[in-house]
Length: 254
Length: 216
Image (cartoon, rainbow over all chains, first blue to last red):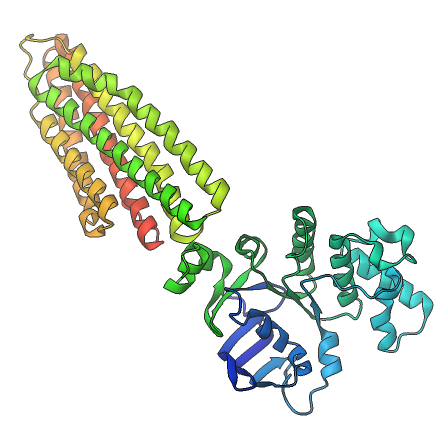
């Protein structure tokens, strides 16, 4: 059997918001160049977990994480980890499209420029490449200097994905990227995710179980801060091991 | 919406049970007609063919609707897929029962050729198998169907015995060829019914455990 390559290994992750423990002893391995979906009822900790993967939770004052998260042979949570570098290598896309109130071009060029890229030709190339990878280039190539705010919701979301791709990450985290979009825009993002896994590892949080079943290779089911079951998506949706998982995916919860 | 889905799935499951009982009734009556030579019973079975068709179409439509509207997963999905397959197998059993009844009607009476008792025994075995698989579906008790393969082997053995027997009679008296051809066909229909019961058993195992087994 071919040995699986892991993009990220999460070992015994515990997380507290102040006094309240929100995540309990989570261990999972995110496989490289695959799409991993996290599902579970609201408040189960999916978003909290995905936000640990690039230390976005650092921005929350009272949030405390105790974990070993191995990414590129380094522990993301070690005291000497370079958070800026981690967030460049592990990009994130949020539920609501959040483009900068700038031109389409600037939205993409902003990241690489912050990381020191000054040459215009190089930036032009990055902008084109990123927009192409996010399946947006054809729709916006004639109006790159127009404001990103004028794009539709679905286009804005793909712009955000392009923006994440511009800094050449290894992994992209998506926190319900389609929940604010209409069905057509959703289909486009789903197709895009399928394309992206050729070059990137994708972790997606979704409330839409059919979406998880469609686009992901691996699925984790979370409940009350615990990872109840993690495995191949097909297995999880056809014949899960845990009764709780089955109840949740069949909609027989509570 | 879950409530409605659960209700509708429950109804679908009970419709298949009704259909299964109709198939069983048809098979039972066709075997009765075989034993008693009662043409009126055979005619009743033939008339029930259309009822099987009504179930067939209705169950397929309802299953399709449930899949399209609720996108079921896990055991719910396995149940619906199993129901769709059972629908086909049960339809076949109903049609074979009708075919047996047609043969019974076509067999000339009192022509002096010995009738085959073993075909009645074969019919009873298949009927018992069908009865158990329906019970297993109703109760999800897999122990009822665990020896289906063996039971079907016995049915198959009987089938070949009947074929040989018929051929011997045919060679003995070529005038009996028409008569025994009916018996060969009926034996074949019963043998097919046994296979369909085995297929239903396989699907039931899949529905309940998620694992696939091979019986036949």
